[in-house]
Image (cartoon, rainbow, N blue to C red):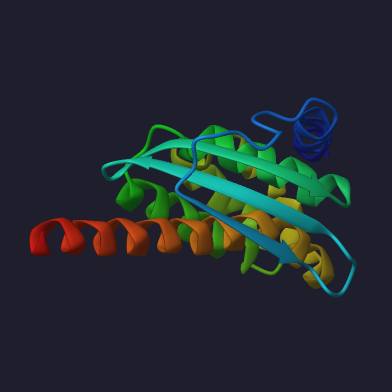
Length: 160
């Protein structure tokens, strides 16, 4: 029970004191995602420096889980390569799909997940999993768009 309490505190801390909140420039792409079941929303901007995530900023509204998840995501992914960030995202997705059996998984992957281990208990509640994953799906979409725009720009330079 003590561990669950600590995890709840991490989520509440990120909710009350969100990191990287507020849309910033420059950015390579921007997306807006909505969780239709509960109405949570996030607008996320991603900026890249080559294949490194140089910035993630967002505006969001919704429950403490969706808000805290966006804050944790930004902390975890800024400064990582896109490939490293995708690996973190995949690990978080596995945690969320653990259907309440995620505590052991979270402990095994604590070095990768850092504060995201706090969401292990969320996996017990399918409706809440969507809240926790909202910003992660937005990040995945925004990053794909940023990479596509970069590829298109590179091709245009080659033609010129």
